[in-house]
Image (cartoon, rainbow, N blue to C red; front, side, top):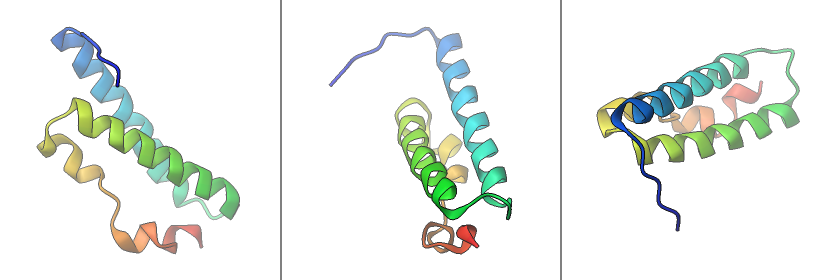
Length: 78
């Protein structure tokens, strides 16, 4: 376990960066030109970023980034 001390402004910046990266991944998952293996890696990265976001943001901020199970199970791979 690691600890981190940040100021409020830094915390908001971390939240912003995580959300922006997650939005970018969600956008790219819809691109049909991207191969399945790449999309799988993108989904794994998204899961990691989401877990980080849940640690630094209130629930009201991260609930909109939860992946619906239908996307989790492969619809975005097509």
